[in-house]
Length: 301
Image (cartoon, rainbow, N blue to C red; front, side):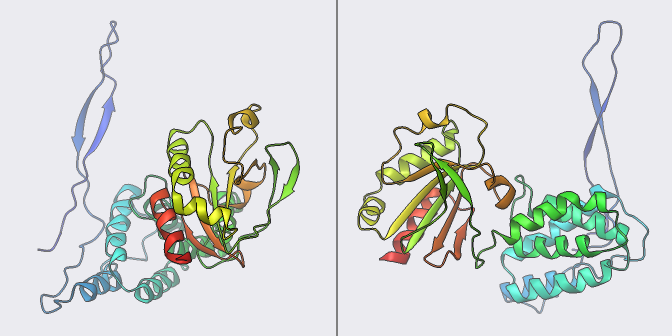
């Protein structure tokens, strides 16, 4: 059934206070959809092809000549468009994104709004799905557009630099760190594969990940055989007591803190994992520790 109107519930907090500062109340309002969302033709039965069709045809009814649009409505539309990305062919997703950005390039205001929606749907820690390759295309488009103020590009340029350093298939850049003995070190993996964990010793999820890694028999064996490196890097030097906090970390892990890591790498979560090969090419990123461990086992064994 075609969706002609999108009802977005928004809670507007109205100050209903009196002399006794009573609690605020709220009331819902509704907003119309920006355009009519498409419906997949019934004769397309294959699941992948249905998602391909949605990716390619989703914006057909959108008016790209508008001066601006409602950001909340656009955010919903963009998020809806990203849902079939999980099931569509990657080349269809990339080609359609290029076509979309070609249209948006002629309208810098709308391009800026679309980039904000892309950030929320594809990059934010709250996003349901991260698709770095697609988001990079939006970042490249907005940072190259001469009609958009430079001040609006600052954070997008920073995101683009970090993502280019961190995309799967790219080579990880060199960085320096201070090891647990206080020595200045350069990142030099020596094994066939390397796990890099960016985390903090006082982070609960990091503590759990540490237990998983140090208790896994296969990971321990690969470390002892020299087939695997584990780097545990604290991506800042804000805590002066960090060296004491990592004193009990496995001796065969390379543990340290780096002032520059957050400026170089895409670190949206704590912990953030990377797996790289002997050429420092990124094989996996932003995966849970269980997937990291299983990926290493699959690669080596």
